[in-house]
Length: 223
Image 1 (spheres, rainbow, N blue to C red):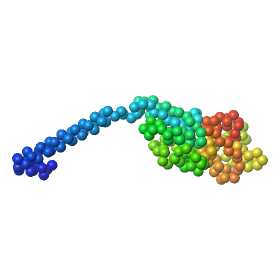
Image 2 (image 1 turned 135 degrees about the vertical axis):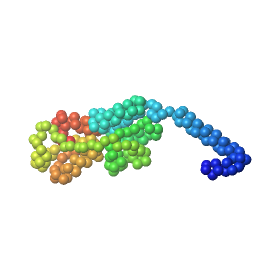
Image 3 (image 1 turned 90 degrees about the vertical axis):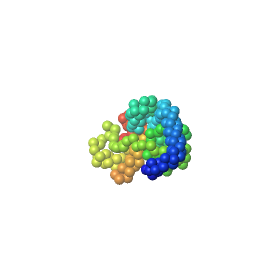
Image 4 (image 1 turned 180 degrees about the horizontal axis):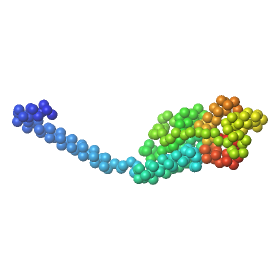
């Protein structure tokens, strides 16, 4: 621009001939800017309709509570309904498989555990989808801390007493529930068994909520 401005001052004729293409260029540039602005104005803002979050575990569990908390905040921020739909089964595979078949338009999400990519491919011969190609991680929603909890009737008041009790049950080992085969509680319980040198029978559920219900009912010993 500085060079053109200097030339324009030195030569009025060149200024006239140079201003014509410059004016046409400015007109084209303005047209492109308006066209882009109009296109953005005509395109509906996302989200323009309700968003669905599918959860791979039953209602009442930690994943369900987390999904509904996030959905409430999203709905307030976006001004659109955010609906939570529970589709438990196969350690989260059923929900993840369902969303992998939906249009990639941002209106179908899934809240699931990282076991979808890290554990399930080694447990299931057929997952129904490719966790590395068919679904895309968007954001981490939270970090979960796990605790060992036993039924109240179990005669153990601390971890040392619990381990001693488990070691004494050689003929009838304790049993424990988890959110499902391959879930984080299942894997951590197996690691605990190995490190403590105890035996316990795994009882898999379709989620943490039914596992906790059976623990409170006395059907399992710990979770």
